[in-house]
Structure formats: structure tokens, C-alpha cells
Length: 82
Length: 215
Image (cartoon, rainbow over all chains, first blue to last red; front, side):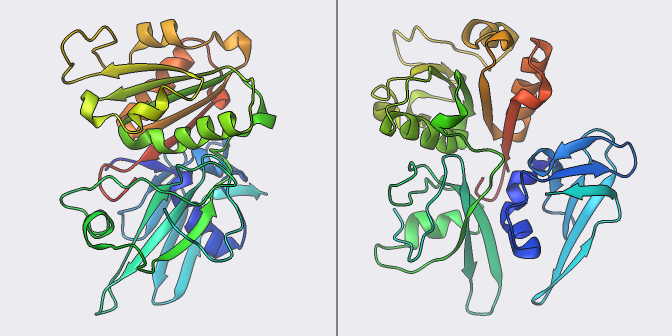
């Protein structure tokens, strides 16, 4: 499946975090690579939305919406800095 | 053109999300880049995809005066304004030209003297979006037509490659602002090639459009 990038989920992130997130910096919990969220690899058509590290491929974040509730898993991130 | 109540204003390169809800509650949401410059009414350019869920509605059924559910403006990573300086190197594949057009229109409206170059890859001349306006923007526009060329075409006739980028792009030493937008394989090829040519990866800002579903 073809990856998009963090720009594609700017709206989703805005809804979840309440602010512009594509310029935030995230650090991969696996390889330590630091990237702006706009640069992260995003898969929209997985079950839910999956965000991976473009350097090592580790899953950084997942977002699943059930009815009106977002379930967010960010365990793959070592750091997320606005 | 969209008339959005309470629109906060947008920056060149941002997008918005359009959400459609069917009578049975099924929802589909797609992102569309804003092609108009800051300070002007919001305009999006929609490419119709035959198997799309949203674009056939937007291009065929939507009428002037209809209401749409929107979210935006969205994005802060893939944006440019004259205050960001240049030179400005824009590389577009297909409808990836839309957010780059907002940057070029913004540059022109602001009477910015930042040098700007657009390398724009299309399949045929008919596929070139904003064809006439591109010639009037005061920027250097370099086309490549990858599938079919009109008689007498003297421009490029192949996919963007290292040789083409070497000819068109400013050297990295001039510290250009670089924005690449298009389908994922296009963006990966262009960004990877620019890095091979000596551009630091963080200098090359990218936005990937999906092969299906709007952008």
C-alpha cells in the first residue's frame, strides 16, 4: 500500500489535538529519528489510520474512530514536541 | 469557489477536508488543496476519479448554492509565504500543482521579487491545469509532457529525472525553498533525486497525494 505523509492527516490531528500538528516534531521510539509530523509516513486505508517512521518503519501512532470517539495509540513515539 | 462563513483565512499550500454524509449516515472525507492565494475566496480544484466516492459528487452533482461540510484551513508544514524567502523551487506532478499554484499566486499578489521556478510534469498538454494563467505569473515555468506532446513541442518529454532536475533546480548552495507535490511515487523519486544532487533532506518539503480519493 502506498504511503501518504503527515500532511494528509492534518485535519484529523487538528481534531484530536486541537491544534496545528504538521509542524510538530516527533521522535521515533525505535530508531530515534526526529521528524516533523508532516514528513511521517501515513497509511489511511489500514484499519484505522497508521503513522509510521519513514526511517525505520516502526508504527508511531494509530488513530481509530468508533462512532464519535477517537482511540489514539502513541506508544511508538518517544517524544512529540509542539 | 467556496463561500465559507467565518473562514479564518488561509496560507498558501494549505488544504481543507470535505466531508460528505449519505442519507444512511455513511461518511466519506477527502482533502483538497486550496488553489487560491491568501486573502482571496477559497477555491479548490477537484480532479474527478471515476471510482471515487467524493470527487464524482463534487464535479457532477454539486451545484452553485449547495452547502458542504468543510474542515480547515489545515497544515503548517507545506506552506510558503514571501517572508520565507527563496529562491522558490516548486515541483508538481499532475494535480499536485494546486497548492504550488497558491504559492505562485500569493507571490504575485504580494509583488514578491523572490525568484520562482515551477517544474510541472503532466501526461499531455490537455492535462495541464491552469495552463493559460501559468504563463502570466511572472515565474519560470518548465513543463514536461510524459505521454503525448503536441506537434512542435520543444519542452521535456520524459518523467522528471536527475538530469532534468540538475538543469532546472537551483544549486543547493543557493538555499532554495523546495516544495514537491504529486502522487506518492512521483514525490519519492523527485525528493530522492534532489537529495542525491546534494539537497539536505530537510530542505525538501513534500506532500503526497493518494492515487485514489481526492489528493
